[in-house]
Image 1 (cartoon, one colour):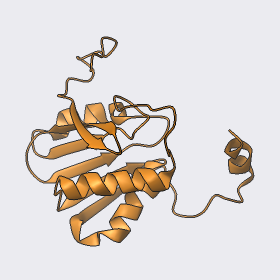
Image 2: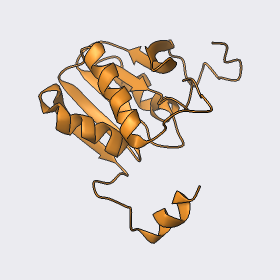
Image 3: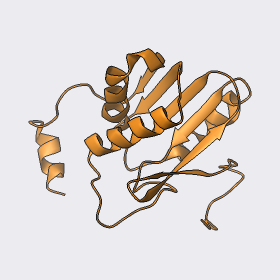
Length: 150
C-alpha cells in the first residue's frame, strides 16, 4: 500500500499485513526478545506506540496491530466494527502468529478487545499493562448512551 502521507521519520517501521475476513490487517513486528503486544483504542492506531517501540525494540519484540478500519489496515465500508469482532480478529492473529509469553499493552477500547483475549488464553499472557481503559459495562452510562447513537 502506498502511504505517501506517512512521515517515515516518525513511524520508521516495516509494514506487514495479515489477511482476515477478506481484509488486510496492518501490523508492525520490530525487534527481538520477549513479545510485547500493543493493542490500540479508538479512534487511533499503532502510531500511538511509535516512540515506546523505537526504544523497546532493542530488547523486546514489539508487535502492534491496527484494527480493521484504523491506521494502515483496510477500511471497508460494510464491516462488523464491534469490540467483540476486533477481539476475534486479535485472537486469530495471536494464535496464527503463535505469540506466547506476551506482555499485553492495551489502551482505551483496546482494553476490552485485548483483555477478553487474555481471559480466553491466560497461558499466553505474562504481564498486563492497562492504560486508560475499563473492565465493566458502560451500557447504562449517560455519556455512553449519548455517543451510542452515532
